[in-house]
Length: 413
Ligand SMILES: [Zn+2]
Image 1 (spheres, rainbow, N blue to C red):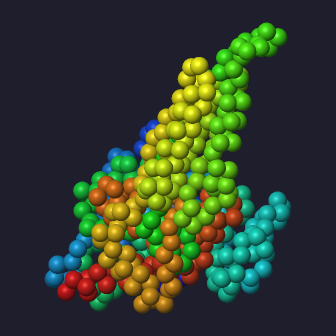
Image 2: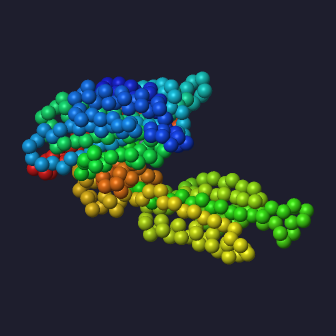
C-alpha cells in the first residue's frame, strides 16, 4: 500500500515552496523562484534512487527508472508541472489537513470568514470520511500540479522499493511554466525518448482525457475618425459603436457562460476603446476541427461585412492559432488510453473519459511527437483560495501510475 503519511508529507514539502509563474516574463523559467522547487526535486529524485536525473538550463527535469524485465517494453513517461497559476498568490501557502471530513462547511480562515462549503462546491460530498488538504483561505494550494508531482515521485519510489512489480523503462518529466502555456515549449521530446506519456494534471478521481479544445485568438482593431463633436455631422466615425455592432453580431449564446461539454465558443476577453480606435480581444474554442475553422471564418467574414458598409477599411482582424485538439494524435494509438482505462478498472476506479475544455501540456506534447493523454491528479477548484485535494485521490493516482507501468510490461511479453 502507498502510505498516506508519505504522500501528505511529500505534497506539503512542495506546496510550501512558492513557484508562481509569470506570463509577462520571457525567460524560462518565467520566475527565478521556480528553481527552488526544481532543485529540490532533482535532489529528491537522486535520493530515492532514480537514474539519469537531469535538470537543464530552463529547469526542465528528466529522470529514468530502468526496466526490471528482460523482454522489450515500450518506454513510457509521466509528466507534470511544478509552477502554479499567476491567477492567485502562491506565497506563504499554509496547508490545513482535515481528517475524516464530515461533509460540513470547512472554515478555511476564521478571521477573514472564508469558508469552503459543500453548499457551493458539492464535489466535496464525495469525499466524506476522507482526508482533505486545503488552504488557509489566503492563497491557492498548488495541488495543480504538485499533486501530480507527488504521485509520480511516490510511484517511482514504490517501484524502486518493490522490485517484484515488473515494468519496462519509465521516464519522468517535470516542467516549469505550464500555467502560462509554455510548459511544453522547451520540452526535449527526443531526449525524453518515450513512446508515449501521461500528464498527471487532471482534476477529480477517475478523469482520463485525450481530447481538448482547438484554440485561436483574434485581435480586432477598429479604426474610427475623431472630429470636434460640434462639427461632426457625417464626418465622425466612432469606433466604439462599430465595436458594439461587431460584438452583437456574434452569437450571444456561444460564449463560455452558456456552453459546456463539447460545445465551442467565442469569448470576448478584453475591450479597450475611444472614438479613434477600439481593440477587441477574443479567444475562439472548439473541439471539432471543422467547427473551429468555421468559427474563424465567421469572425473574419463579419469584419469584411462591416468593412463593406464603410468607404474605407474600418476593421482589421488578426487570428492566430494557439493549440489543437490532441485527439487526432491519440486516436491512431488508442491503446495508450485503453491501458490507462484498464489500470483504473483493475483498481476499482470508475474512469471518467471526457473532453478538456482547455488545453494541456499533453496536447502540445502530442503535436510534438509524444502522444500524451491526461490523468486525474485529484485536486479541485484550481487557481484559487478554495483549492483542495483529497489525500486518498493522490493515493489512487499513484496506484494508477504503478498499474499502467505493470500493464504495459505485461502486454508486451
Ligand atoms: Zn495543471
